[in-house]
Amino acid sequence: MNPLITPNQLEELVNTGADILICDCRFDLVNPNAGREAYNTGHILGAIYVDLDHDLSAAKTGSNGRHPLPSPQAWADTRQRLGMDPKTTVIAYDNHGSVYASRLWWMLKASGHSHVQVLDGGLSAWNGSIGTIPPVATPLKTAIEPQEWMGSVTVDAMEQWLTDPKGQCVVDARAEDRFRGENETLDAIGGHIPGALNRFFKHNLSAGQFKSPDALRAEFKALLGNASASSVIHQCGSGVSACHNVLAMEVAGLLGSHLYVGSWSEWCTDPKRPIAT
Image (cartoon, rainbow, N blue to C red; front, top):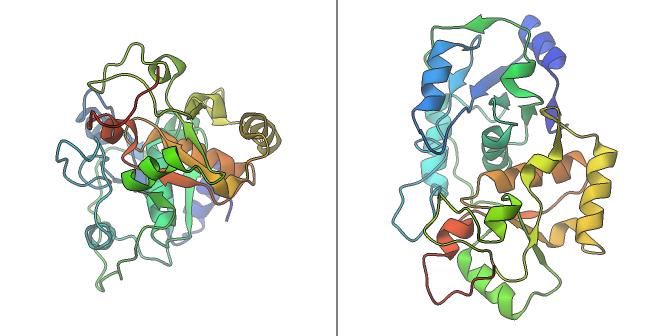
């Protein structure tokens, strides 16, 4: 399945009554209530709201990052509560360049839900019907079988990578200044994991939509050199915008990269871990 869907393609699915579940993933890291408030004001008709903090993350402990992954059982319970039937195609969107939608896309793919796409261009590109009354999610009658996360990398594995890279490379999705350790406003310490490359996720976009597969492939190949897609570990500040780079690589046909979900917000909590600027 193409990881992206155009507004016209989605509108056709809506009009034909296809088995889809549209998920509004808008969010604001500085104002966590802003996404739901925007959703309540207006959303794609029939879309449910999926919250980054409450639906797509586990509780924070102070050392596991700002958006840690829920346990496989907790995520299976969330999918059941939201009505994400494994046979249903989930369409995720936001209005932030698809960065939060890509987190839902990755979590579903990594837990075995193959039918999931991101609305290219997000809400701004949508010309179909808009709703103002939030629909109530319809929970599934049967439980979803939990599955261990596929393609997820732990902080222990990242520490091991520093001493023995084994041909793997790390790509940091944050803006260039934060990568250098400048203008850090979200985490207590600035910098990056030593040896990481930098690919700001917004470089995947042109006018709010993903660049062509050919353009993305050329840009990632230039960054990665001879490294294979399956040797790439993506990270960012808290495991959200890194999903955008995973998605962009899939759009480019570069499959099999991994995600370090804890990312910089987990890495920098232990003073024993090295930091580069």
